[in-house]
Image (cartoon, rainbow over the protein chains, first blue to last red):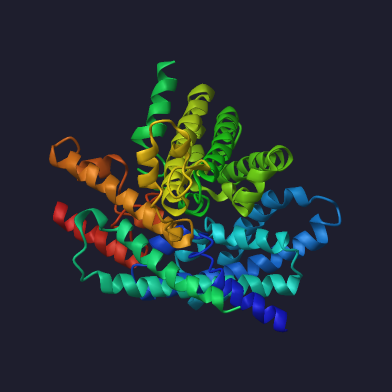
Length: 191
Length: 266
């Protein structure tokens, strides 16, 4: 239990997926204009990454590893993730239309989010058990949500600021993200 | 041959994937702690890009239109695995320093983007050179970013000490004054850490923006026309241009934006 908690804190804060590992930057920079949409994206990412890391861990443990096919990890995982996102989309549309409405366009966008594949591969590389993988996946996604919501908050405030012409848009967002990354470096003293 | 050269120029300068199209940001920021790492990542991506472009172009008449994206992904993932195993076998030092970012070449949007927008509809030789041009453009950008970070953060470029107490100029006859001047440099170690990546890339993109704006002022490019020509349809949800400052994901809002623009046009 203690170990799981440590893994969760490390993945969510110390090794934050966007600010120190640079995974999932496209949605992080693209969908962070408003706190509301950012939170929606965060929820979708938590949902998909937790599910994907469970499925990937199961496949790796019970299909790939016993047959000595671990070199196929990359191919299998990316296909599994793409299929999973499609499947989740269909299931949600059929059985939970409210949630489907809420997640909206973010679901299909997640397939191209490298954080999903990144987490699945990290879990395998560190040879986590299935339970640990799920916890790690959830914590990583939670870290993503924390970061994107904070950045969206900053960008909402920044709308009213006088930004130099050349820095408008992407550059100033990256500077803000850089400052956040400095703040998140502080968490490394946590453990 | 002309076509091939044109593709190379296009990838390296005109449509540089990192600096102009701002695609593939994750590896750009993650592995550029040194010029060497940047170059290693860039070259691995180039190899995958050239092979996948050539292969997809070869199979373009066989792959059915409806399942093309999964087919592309499988082809790309296979080549990535090949490159990964080769690196692991022959250059383990690069393999160790790039780590998880090698398998993640699969999700680099440059590769899928070129497959979809060029290789699937063009013959083999131009596709091959398109991949080479784009790959080298990516490599050049990554190496430059890596060099900036390495120079500011560790006083080195490609591992050669240029700044700081024991810099290389001490060993060159007649450059002692210069060496003594540079010896006073103190490493700004934040540039080799995560935040530095954001700062360097932000500055480089701002610089590119400035150059573009000046060109637009001189009447070389009209920004709006350039955007339209690049295919901006105010549909940010399906747009690959992640560097676009007006990017918007909220479907309702982007519809509103479209309506508004429609009214303005009318």
